[in-house]
Length: 345
Image (cartoon, rainbow, N blue to C red; front, side, top):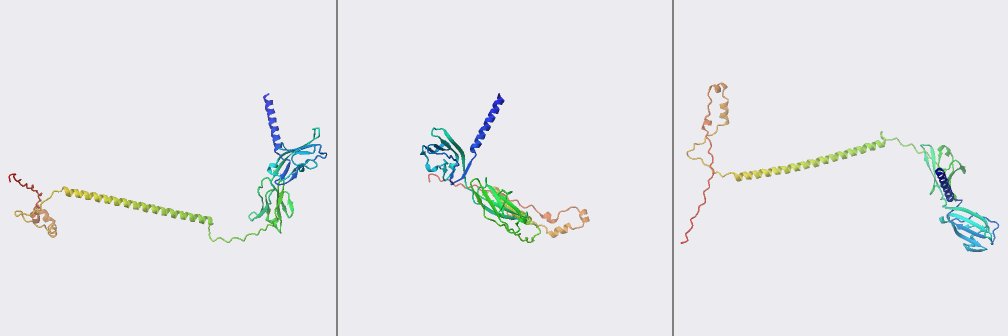
């Protein structure tokens, strides 16, 4: 039972899709702004018949016993066809005609679907010569090429096998003067291009290259050299900045050390005691002059044997030396206090 229901549902959906496809398909085509008569003919039509036209289920013409209640009498031909003027996209849709006898029985029924399309524009035929492949390529340029049918003619003869927008012909077939045209069409119009006579002349041979290498290789090497120079400049700038920074730090450190030494010296000078200038007294022996360098050299340069045999003796200059007097610290006398005067005075 379930299988039967599924099969029935599948058939029903297929029937609905088929009806929708038939509904969307068009029986008649017309261009925007065009006028046309719908192809309905009833030869025995008289004023006693009832004539009704509908567009998308809306009554657009109704005549009964020769009196028109909807529409205009000039919109109907003697055979009952409906005349449509200045068609627009809104004019597309389903049209239906019904003819009834005076007793309200159906005499004839007609229905059709109308589609409105734009007319094709005039195509422009261009070509380009391809000497590498030894062919000439023709292109049929047109606005909105989708859905259009293309055709080609060569010397007024239709090329039945060519239905694409482009055409390629070998240069060998262009011997002499050949004439090409292309045409485009749709359901409502057709347009044809002007005649084109392709002429392809081989370009002169290129002059020999002056460089041993290709231009791309030369440009690559040049770019690499420029990049290397920029890198070296950046490195030099960085090193200069770093050297300047180090010098600035060294100068700042030297100034700090000099300042510390100056402060330490000031502290030592402030802490040192004052000494009186000592003059030699009468009792102190006179200062013995120090030996000169020549006397010292003579004493040292004596023979080694004499030096070893003789006992060590001090030189007269050394004996005459006396320790220098040590300066005594200056003693400060206490301040003198004056006696106070008595109150009696």
